[in-house]
Length: 383
Image (cartoon, rainbow, N blue to C red; front, side):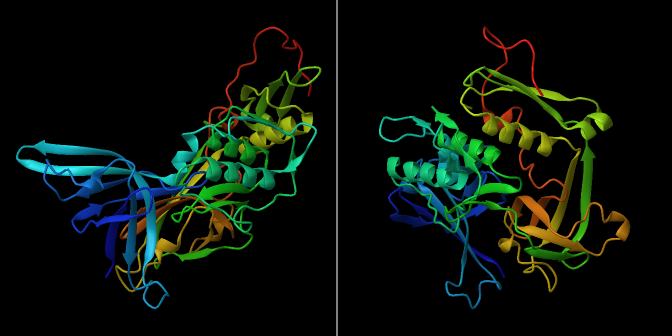
């Protein structure tokens, strides 16, 4: 039988209270991100005002079940986050308190990347490995943040073997990370786990999980769509001399689906090789139809069947058994799990069998703001 424990801490790590009368339903975990929102319902009256309800307090959700029996801790932490909001309800003689939690990765978007008062990190003329630059970004976040909840080591943030000369200027930490991901080789991703550990690594080469039809899951949904195909990028930067206006395309995709173009301006790019990395990666990740595959994995505490759902995380890979060979084009040997929607008795996973590079779509490349207009923009693009 699965047991739950919810603890509340002050931001400095001091334990405030164990919430014996609190419940939660679900939360998500997503690649190129981390733990999503989680809502706790607190079994207290409308006028409750305990110190544990204070905004920015930390909350830890712990479970123990048959999979944790015999482990060194005897339990597993499945969620760590902070209180971002709470709502007091009284309606038709019913009272409740809802506490909204957010994962620690969201704090990366709440402050500017800085070293003291310095907010520009210019690598032009001094190439750095993308993984090394990621570590330096995290070093600044940890040094500049009170009670940082995020950490890393050399095994969790890997070097890529690919360098960048990008000019990181007036960006949040989250924006900087997204740009580094866009510069990285195919199949690289970042993720912040429930412990606050930050990962930057490539897709595993062998399957982390093996799921069997009828034992671990009962069905799968497959959705194909061409609505978000972008097979051409018109890329502009005036930080080169002369200014760069270049079109990147995938001819095969254009032939099959028509030219579907996006325009982006990024004046922090100071060398053509970085423009090539960003635009070519974007086209490679957006040139094909979406194939969205979701599967509902049963928890093994519900019956003799099922799976240890707490062991499934974004960035893991999986293989499915029990399907006809006619579906071999979809169900590959090593498919990337990009999202996990967790509840106590099941986990709904989203996988990406064909395009491991495209994790989370954005309307522009890595959130960079800019349009191709104004004086000095070339009237003819190169290819």
